[in-house]
Length: 242
Image (cartoon, rainbow, N blue to C red; front, side, top):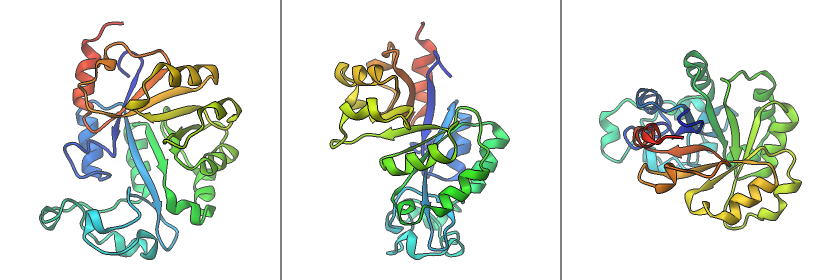
């Protein structure tokens, strides 16, 4: 932590490496991140994998949905930007592979549960029942029903709701299964800070690039930054005195 605020590398150090790859996670650790944000999806054969999109098109060039493919199939696809992926060796990792790495390095994970898991929550439940993750790890999602499952299965795990324009902030007080709020930096406004404080929820902001004035003296409700550039955020936080 820097000034008691964690720096979570968004999909790993995705400003420098291919997102959600082992290289991005290693780079984030090298650059001083104190946590890693990852995305969790589900394959056709119910394997949890670390990948952001439901479609494979953007990162693999394959016009397929992740949910239509087995893990054995998707693990053979190279991922990266168009053209350059032909020359790299980046692949979609399983969640278990990333958990093993995180436990080895005691690197906290911000585990975002994505839409494909809504189609079959049994693999999530099975995973939660036996999961061990580093201290400081937590689960997040735009899907409140998935956060309820996490809290029901593992009450000790922190849960965070990701907010969008439709989110009804006044309901925070009634969300006892939620510990914190994850929001884009545009929500760094007194009104939203007050909603969190009144509901006794913590807050982490994403979309941080290291140039924001709020990094120097954030509201006490802020406990984490989520960024593609952990080194830039770390530099600002290290030079800011509390």
